[in-house]
Image (tube, rainbow, N blue to C red; front, side):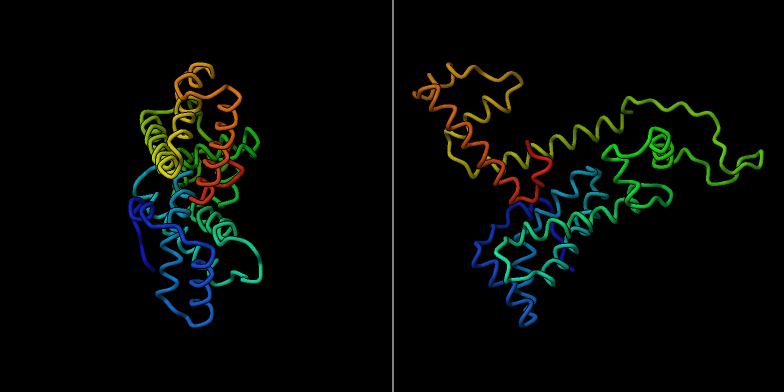
Length: 249
């Protein structure tokens, strides 16, 4: 199975609809491994973007991205060419499923079902279950029976809701990774659209419409149209990179 770095994946050109179908046909009909590699390389960024939602640890990130590539391979095997849908849209479920199935093996220090790990990530666990989950993933839960003989008892443990230094660094790294995805998306857009997004959406304090409109030499109504169009294009580009519609504004 091939492997690709994040930088290599982001440099790969996206395929047109016709190129995509030709690659899928080559693999499914003739077992053409070169066609399969073209397809997987062009969508490898999708595996990296799914993996980046759960970790920024370089080792973990690479492992999860590799699992995502396996999801892409399964999607290439089962893709139905009779359906009028892009491969990235169809493959999203396979990539997400492959990455989520690997989460508990990579992130937890004891065996935790992937479903439980995901429920904890999305806030679908009860307060008590979440507490035990946090202890497990941090290695706080003792695997040996309690000295009293009650295996289910836990010693009193103080768990702070504030991020520790390692988690703080991890969050910062994840934000930097997200900004790289956004910068890659902006590189494909028109200069006017980029200027509006930077000044209205990426600035710590959005600039007034009147000021931006004056600088660009357009009316405020025209500026609102440019902003709406720019956000729609940004969403489309990010989705093509593998982001789910559910996590985009």
